[in-house]
Image (tube, rainbow, N blue to C red; front, top):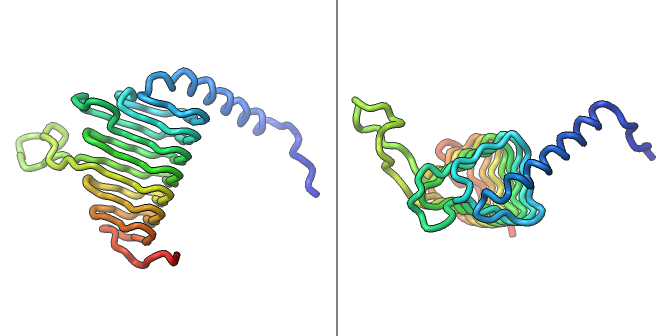
Length: 192
């Protein structure tokens, strides 16, 4: 049997980081539309208009994640994070709706957006052009998005689906399937 590790500088640093994140989560939570019990944010973290974001229970928002709601004309939250979601270095941007189901695993560097900029006017920088495509995004319960996945507007990823690392998802991924590539394509069904 291995004895427990002795207290050392690294363990003290980790404990200090956990205490800092717990305190900052308590300060940040009231700024959200909803922030479920047991959820926590690991800092650094950025949010634009967090009052338009609903976070479920027991959610872990890993460091360097970013929630952005650039427009404020919706009646309520436009980003919905279900219970027990885990994410790390995740960026979610929404103007209409991004809905992440329960128990979804989101790998590092994932980007999810329900909108994209137009680029038809060559006299304007892309960032100054109007939004061209706005369509809700949904990720079903228990899905897994691997590292660096990009999910584009209008996509639904079904329950229990797996999207492989570095995939660009521009069309729906059915429940209990595995999708990979750029653009992502279904490579097989997950046996039930």
